[in-house]
Image (cartoon, rainbow, N blue to C red; front, side, top):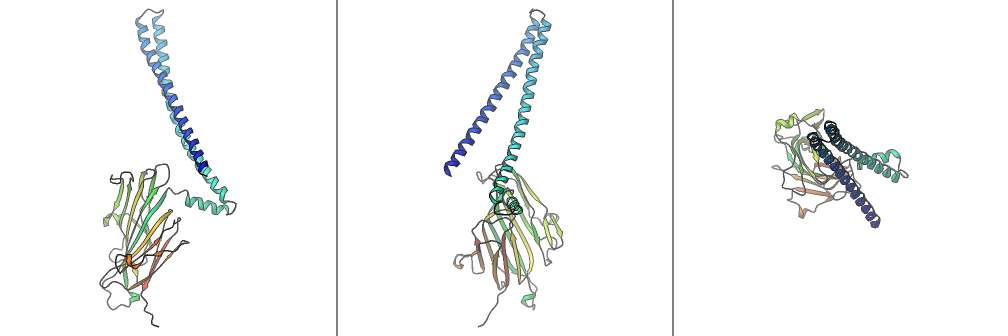
Length: 343
C-alpha cells in the first residue's frame, strides 16, 4: 500500500512538472512573438524615412505585420487563460465524479443505492470537520418561586457551545452557520431571542496572532433583529465567513439562555463530522438546584464520565466522547430533582 501511494505521488509530481514546463514554453513563445511585433513596428517607421523601393508600401506592410503579431499574442494569452480556467473546473468536476463513483462502487454491493447516496452526501459533500467541541451547561434556579413544589419550579439554563471547524478541502470555501434553538417555556426576562452571543472567526494556524475575518453578535438589539421566530423554534439569520483557505480554522462560539423545568432534557446535534467532544454541567445559585443528571448519545459509543477528583468543584459534572461523530449524531442531557430513595 505504501509503495503504491509513493508511485501515485511520483506520477502526480511528474504531471505537475510537465504542466509547468508547457506553460513556461507557451509564455516564452508569446513573448518572442510579441517582441518581434514591436521590432517590426519600429522598423516600419525607419523604412518610412529611407529609400527602400516604395517606402510607403513597406512602411505600412511591416507596421500591419507588427500589429498583427501583437494582437495575436493578446488573443492567444486570453484564450490560453480561458482554456486553463475551464480545464481546471472540468478537472475538479471529474475528480468529484470519480470519487463519488468509486465510493458507490465500494459500498453498492452490500448497501442499497439510496443509503450509499445518503452516506456520500453526509460524509463527503461537507467542506468542514469540527474539532474540540465543548458544550457547557449552567443551571440556576429562577428567583421569586417561594412555596412552589419542586416539580413546578423553573430553572435558568445557560448553554455555551464552542468548537473549531477546519476546512479539509484543497480549495477556498465559505463557512456558514444558522444556529437554532427550540424554546418550550417563554423567558419573562427576554422573550424575543434565546441567543446571548454568537462569534465566528477565521484563525490562521500558521499565524494564530494575526486577526482574521470575524462576525461577532453580542448586543441585545442586534441579536433580537437577527433572530426569527417560527413558533417554538428560534433561528439566527445565516452568518457567513467568506474565503476560508484550505487548512484554516473557523472558531465558533454560541451562547444561549432559556428557561426550563426542574425535570427536562436538552439535545445537541452536529451538522458536520466532528471529533473530541466534552460535555460539562455546573450548578449555581443560593442555594443551587438539587439535581441529578443522565447523559445519553446518538452514537455507538457512550459518554465517559470524568472522575470527581479531576473536576473543577463538587457542583460540576463532566463527560467526554473521544470518538469520531458523524453528521446528525449528538448528545442528550436529562435532569430531574434528585430522588432520595429509602431502603
